[in-house]
Amino acid sequence: TFPHDCRVQEDNSSNSLPQCYSENVKLLMAWVNAVCEFYNIKVENFTVSFSDGRVLCHLIHHYHPCYVPLEAVCQRTTQTIECSRTHTVGLNSSSSSSSESDTSLNVVEGMFDQTVTASVLYKELLDNERKNFQLINAAVSDLGGIPAMIHHSDMSNTIPDEKVVITYVSFLCARLLDLRQETRAARLIQAAWRNYRLKRELKLSQEKDRAARIIQKSAINFLARRRILKEKNAAIFIQKHWRRYLARRIFLNLKKRK
Image (tube, rainbow, N blue to C red; front, side):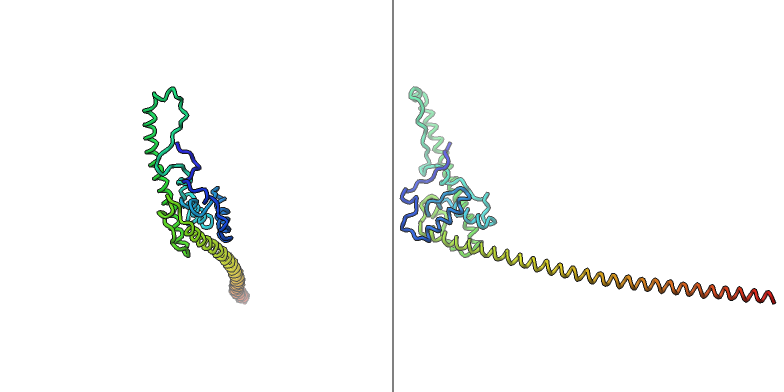
């Protein structure tokens, strides 16, 4: 098995930012670590710490997760899994001396198996780093405003150029923060538009309701007048025939008497 939390080794002199760095570069590193702290990543420099692409992926994901989903970031890289560049693994030397002669063949076979395993693992880790940089390049292309300055062949399995990384991270920082402000402005505009639209729809609904009430009232009045008129005409018609009936009856009675 391979122990975790191991890294490709770099000279200790580059593990911390030199004092000659400008205040802006120190602030840039502080911003990177402030974001990466959410993902339990400690960034120590602008070289090897960026070589596997995880830091850049997390920076983009933190501000725009739609471009780089967290589950798409490959966490198994040469920065998180120990695997020597010669594809070999050291054996545990704690075996007893009494059994050394009996297990020498097994040790040789174990060394061969672990060497092959380490070689396969190393290729897998490098392939994961390549996938991370593919995610970065795709996201940066969609974000726009960031020059295509890095390639996985210049970053992975090597010590990246520090000036290139600092410049790239500076562009990325500016763009992410600008987009964050643009997103906030867009949300404010959307909220204002929604409020305006809701008020407009409410006013329109109230006007429609008022118009419907007026129409309904007019219709009720019209139908009421029409009903009254029909009832009046019916009453006149009945009265007319009733009077004719009474007049005829009186006439017939008078005629009989004569």
